[in-house]
Amino acid sequence: MHDDDEPVGRILTRRQALAALGLAGAGLTIVGSAGAAYASTGSTAASTATQALAAIDCVAKPEMTEGPYFVDEGLNRSDIRTDPSDGSTVVGTRLDVNFSVLQVGTAGCVPLADAIVDIWHCDAFGVYSDVAANDSVGKKFLRGYQVSNAAGKVTFTTILPGWYQGRTIHIHIKIRTTGTDGNPYEFTSQLYFTEEFQLAYLATDPYAAQGTRDTTNATDPWYLEAGDQMLLTPRTRRLGYTADFCIGLDLSDTAVGAPDSGGPGGPPPPSPTPTASASA
Image 1 (cartoon, helix red, strand yellow):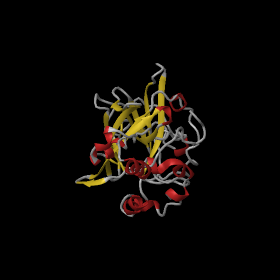
Image 2: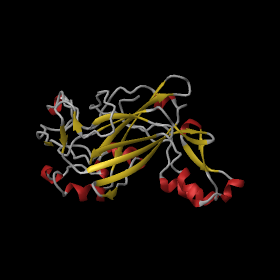
Image 3: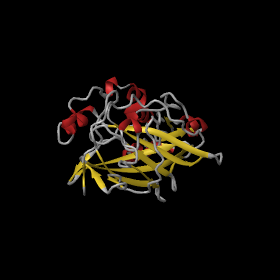
């Protein structure tokens, strides 16, 4: 991959895709490895609004830096809140994220089965597990992977992340599969939240103990590259929040699919607050 944070390929915002559809009065088509969407003419003009909106997800998502904190722990699990090193569970508001992984092609999108999907992020106090700079080596909380099913689906149960100096709030994701050329394909990016959502939950326990964050979406250089393409929109549920997110991958794009080599993901957190945990 790259050690910088430039997104690879052309991307469209949801608003841009809707505008294109409105101007053309037609369905959405994907163009090759650029991941660009355009509206076609012809019989598809009669497509329903629902179909058109669904097609907007069939756009290759932007890749972003891996950052310095990826650790390939090999933890095949859906609930990543527990720490297998001691059985504890991190504190924080529950978040279930339901991913749909799609393969983008010239004819549209199809579910991508058997892809390895990793996510990792800091805890409510800005601490990553198994990182020397965080004094958390040997811990494995808030890390794990799932393998996509025949419908391209994986689900993770985690918590809303906290913040640390120099970055807006984010969740890392890595997807590993095979490219159309038969070689390993590795996609890495970051997921974000709106400002309004961040402010609301950071005012609650245990997040409020961290004080006022120093970086917003508008002042985070990594978010400004393409973060609005990777926004989660959680909705409330009885035990916290749930969010759905669709990731389209162009498996013919070898620039995106090249192996990652880490890279800057923002400055490391300052001396970390000891990780709070509960037994269940």
